[in-house]
Image (cartoon, rainbow, N blue to C red; front, top):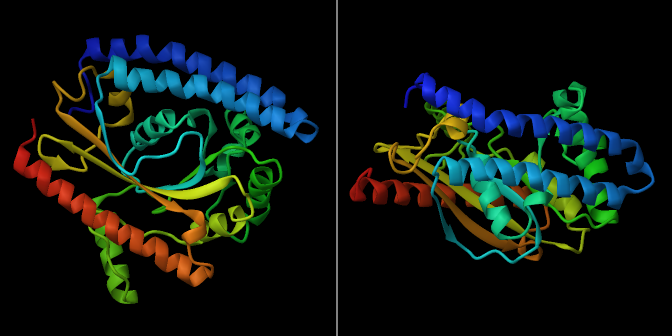
Length: 305
């Protein structure tokens, strides 16, 4: 699809998204104003910010699925309602968020989604402050420097039993063919298995998350999501951010396919040591890659329509 849509599509996108963006700004202001209260009323602030977050995410989900006609196919394990969990997923495009949030909404956890975000956002007035107040982990990907931030987020989940889907894209970057080639070289050099259609996962953040949240009795599982796209026969071809917000009939006229495959693993079944946890995540990525390859072949035989 062209990155420069016709003028009517651009105008349509503005009409749809400007009200949502204005509301997003207003919500960020409201949540930022709650930040000082978090010291005294942590659970109340968390619940209030989660309710506000639900309205923001439900609105943008409505734009993507209802107004712009994205049909999200879901397969795999059935997820319990209102269960707190650690969520890991591959990262392809902006639209990954829609697929994850579609799963969260079906499980009654949309308002409780918390994503690992870049630490630089802390300096952004209202937006960054709002994310911080909500309990989003603001990290630099240097797990030594991030220890205090992780302790802040994990302590809230453990001590106050905050309901949460704590979500991370374990590859730490979006999939591209160039990055895939670089991952192949690294895996060959270090004698690691290269997952198909995926980048090799970063394990330190996953290990830190699991080891901390084992102490939270209400966090019951790890969810592994495999995210896939196709457009006109091209596998892992996802729409850009603006197209998800502006272009109608994404799954019919423009023939985009959206699919998320879920696997649920009870947290108590995961290995104890850091080394074994790293191997556990590596094996999930190998299996996820095989599943993606199978889906790729299925879509190739059924056609792009």
